[in-house]
Image (cartoon, rainbow, N blue to C red):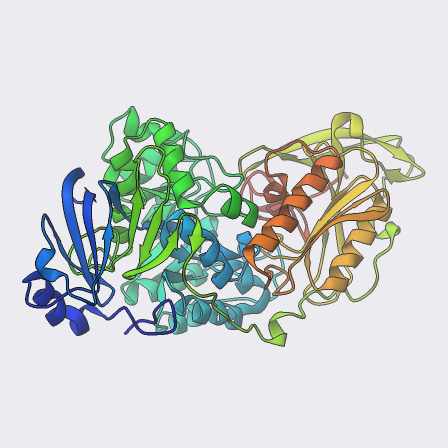
Length: 606
């Protein structure tokens, strides 16, 4: 049996419920819930069937047809759909709960009103901080939810061995152990694509452990090179990929037997550029899947989740029924769960969205596992409680108080100007640009240059209390005046990223996060103007989603007050240490050129 949304078991496994489902469908027994007079969106046949009744028992669908009258008894709840559409509950095929700054329980409460009833989560953020113990915590919390939350075992901690230092490391033995946990659905995104392409034994060992368990290997090929490295990576076993940004990326993946996952997150807008593979080139849409990857709490609470992605795909020219397939049955099939979810058909979990329009997709009612879980934007199931232990909370260890000189960048003796490598932020995309710029030297120190939109960036080690600081330069944020933004969300090693125009403010911001146990803060003119506390692993809050969203909104607003006009600039900030996405990144070991997967000097020619 599966836990129900109010603490009572409502969803039974198919073998446990089969006899009753048959009896209800035959009219010999009555249903728990009947939805009448709906327009059935059938994702198997890609058609809409008017005048349909859906009968539900034991949290599963028993009957889909034109008359469920015989299945209604005195204890049956009846919902009149009044001719509205009955859409399968939406599935997010690839996502990181930690990016929402929320616990699994609060993330679920945030997305339920938006029609999401299934999530496939990769907790590799907490894995980099707490290792296998952290993954187990999120796995156990995921099991105890009113919707389907499946967990992918993180594959890459660290994501690029030799280029970063994580709080914990994972390997093939950890993957093999996790494959036996009840809610593990597969292997999380295999980010070390050079390792796979070169036949690295550790990466291949993790993939083998997953395939031996009969589960899906998630992909992450972040290079634009579709030549031999790409072909070698595909041969290594990853079954999907969400890192495409161009039409040719999507085409290449499906031609090689992968599923192309098209993402729309808070700052990743990669659907529009790839959906043309279906809408214009006419490729079979069955191998295309929609996902979010990373959404912060403000997006979830104010804009939506998978409903937002489906609407966006439709706006980009995708037919509504095809877009819905990409967020339901395609996902279920990919993970081998077609008999469990992804469609409104007998035997499946009763996950249904009721909406009055397929193009604009207003989410008017959400049924999850046979229970009305959300209605008119309000969650109708009780708040879940999960206790994260003290070991998951004391994770920001700087070893000392930082001061402004920690952010000094020394120039070669006698230099008046130097040429430096600069990380170039790209709005609404995860990749960066590798820039080189000439910067002035004053009193032996290299200075940032606001006239070129260049400020400082620092990676502060926070796992082992080493007190080390790696300094560099970044362009694209538009910061002006004296300011600093610090975050312990720093994909994927999750040290602390500090970006600023004032070294004094940078030190103050870093020390503040150490004081509160992690999070995001903004300092301007020496004063704190925004703070989001994230005490769980320095990644997540245990506060309600609405409160976290409000703090995150203030954080984004504060970044704007410092001069930043980028859309969701915080997401770009948090990825500046992700050393598996080109072109240039920063880690605790130095500046990383991801095009060549090697450390490079900050000062060119130094």
